[in-house]
Image 1 (cartoon, rainbow, N blue to C red):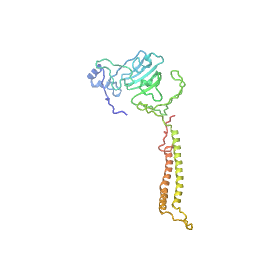
Image 2 (cartoon, rainbow, N blue to C red):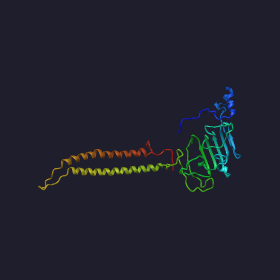
Image 3 (tube, rainbow, N blue to C red):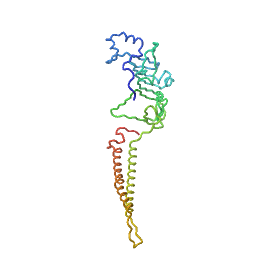
Image 4 (spheres, one colour):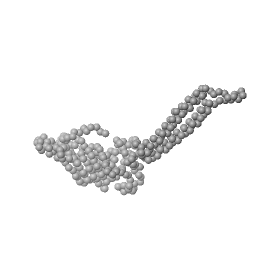
Length: 312
């Protein structure tokens, strides 16, 4: 997230000389008519767009533009339109040319003419029949790659929200050929890249497979619990036998007495195994059941799968 807004809510910086003079001499009753309040016009700096003969421009007096032309991400010689390629139609919808520092005249009182600036302009929807869409916006390639000389649509602003009342789909593929007539030979995915940094890009986890894996892991741990429990029972029987065992003497075959240290140790061990180890195994078995219900079943409050969003 960014910090607090640094640009003033109302800025008359960058106005041309004529507008500055008008603002300094106009009376209060007429000043409201260029204040921008309640839908009135606003006196603010608007740079001039340096258009080409092939462009049809729709604009207002408040730095909002629609340019119907040919692929042009920057100066007039840029893009495939600047190279003279055919089939390079474009639509450039932009508001706020020059971003937070618009200038109508420079310090020498020369009119400011500007080209499209995909970095500084405030917000834009760019549509082109043939373009290098990632290069235009200085985007990393990700795993999807960096397409060249293909149709593209880009949306750029401080914040973008896509709202679907009945759902949103992000779908790749669907056609056998691309816009340039080339066969599409492979299936492309969807990259979610934060910070325009693809250095540690990793695959998404598929929820159903993850649930199945965790359930199997839980079953394996549960089986291990049973193995330890069986071993405990066998060990308890052996400990009991060892604690009470005796030998026969050479004198008339009479039995010897049991060893007091072994008896006391054996009793303590049996008690510990019953009260600690056996109890811990039972608790762990119950925890495994709760783990499955909590994370691997839809009834769980923290079910690991999204109830609404899906991916392949």
